[in-house]
Amino acid sequence: MIVTADEVNRSFRGTLDLLNSRSEGLKSFDMSEHGFWRSFTALWLTLPAYVVSLAFERLRLGLLQPDRALLDNLWVDMVVALGHVAGFIALPVAMIWIARWLRLETAYVPFVIVTNWISVIGMLVLSVPAILMLLGWAPPGLASLFSLAFAIIIVRMQWFATKATLGLSSLPALGIVVLGIVLNAAVASAMRSLLG
Image 1 (tube, rainbow, N blue to C red):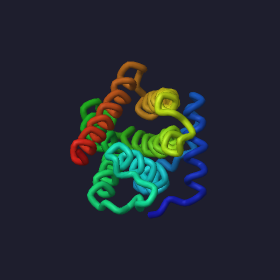
Image 2: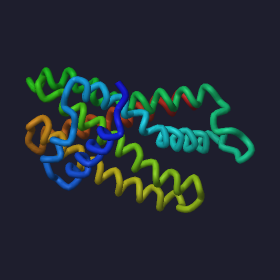
Image 3: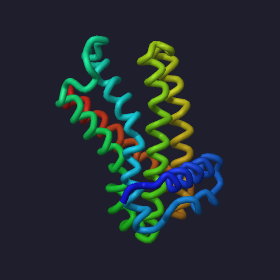
């Protein structure tokens, strides 16, 4: 059940429509059971973002040296990989119970599919400021400013997608988006505490 190039293209186009607050973008996603499972395999598309996260963590730990390979510490590699995957699936897993509590079980699959594709785009876009900083093309302050601007755009897109897929009003949709942010922050904090 590998995601196809056509599905990637359609899903990215649908995500772009959601970015522009066009709910017809939901028609671009494969909302079937196969589309649900393939949206999780789309995590492979974020491999460049994983490499950037790994380099960033190695820099933070003082392990990023020009004469050393990026993948020379199995513990760091595994913890960052685990954090990468956990950050991707945290909200979909939490939404199992929330969807039941809100009686939105039928909207769960579309919500997860769209959220997974937004996460793919988000991870890739948010890795750009980190790349610029790692290459020395942007100072940390400017990279942080870029990250904040990109994060605001992604959060707004997730908020709109949450409203559109779950049929919620603005405030409950915002609550779910905030939950996703809190879960991702908890995953990042756990990862950093494991790394020291």
